[in-house]
Length: 324
Ligand SMILES: NC(=O)c1ccc[n+]([C@@H]2O[C@H](COP(=O)([O-])OP(=O)(O)OC[C@H]3O[C@@H](n4cnc5c(N)ncnc54)[C@H](OP(=O)(O)O)[C@@H]3O)[C@@H](O)[C@H]2O)c1
Image (tube, rainbow, N blue to C red; front, side, top):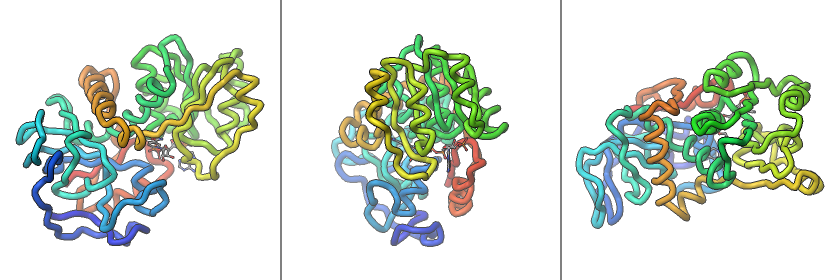
């Protein structure tokens, strides 16, 4: 079978489509015929060796995998041959076949196509875990989302709106702002406008109850300062690339506020059952039309380098999906 893999981490040119033999699945594993794998910001970091954890080599990128079951390893129950399942793991998805962990796999409803299901996996898992497990977000609360047009940001907008909450999205430029409005945000502000906090304060004078922040950088402190009393700022990522922001310790004190980290990878390692439960909720929400997959572009496996080029574009809206 063919896999897009690299023998060292680095640029996309260090990776190529190679013939690879894939063995039978081991205990607790499932062999999949891959139907779709989605790529996000994290995949670009992992490929370049810039992620917090390094994968073993040779490495095949792509952790948001949907495929049909071809073989079950010893002890695997609850899945049948031919069934469409979704799995989130470190990599292995940019290939015709992949071996995945049964403990991290969940059935995909028939109504969801493979590409759609794959595009929901990490962004909606992170947003759901962040908002509800780490943020204790409720429908009567207001939520400020930084990077609201991006993968995890737009998932947070959709999940908060699906539960009836009030959402304020921050995005840059007309196209991204229009996209966040179309996702249902109650208010969208352009954070390139130095006046955005004054505009927010005019609508929400007491501040917002929750911040969902995958961007960091200079926006980090401005978002924390926008919290209401007893507010909670969810630290999700640092897409701005401006280094790790620092927060003056008097601000949490003055707000009686909290900073909470959101680490989906840690959740995957420590509580795979919770990952599967959340993915099940997400697929049911999508089935009922309460959330929608946002796919920016699709590529064939042979065009994986072009998929990574599309991923790197700041103007991109939506997930990049690769289908063998
Ligand atoms: N904690 C977790 O478990 C977890 C899970 C998944 C992802 N993440 C992290 O969350 C962050 C976002 O991931 P994603 O997949 O949602 O990424 P994405 O789809 O590329 O979205 C990134 C967003 O950040 C904004 N942004 C601001 N400055 C940027 C810059 N210099 N370059 C690119 N984008 C910039 C962009 O919006 P504007 O152009 O409007 O500014 C964009 O909407 C990343 O840091 C990723 O590592 C964390």
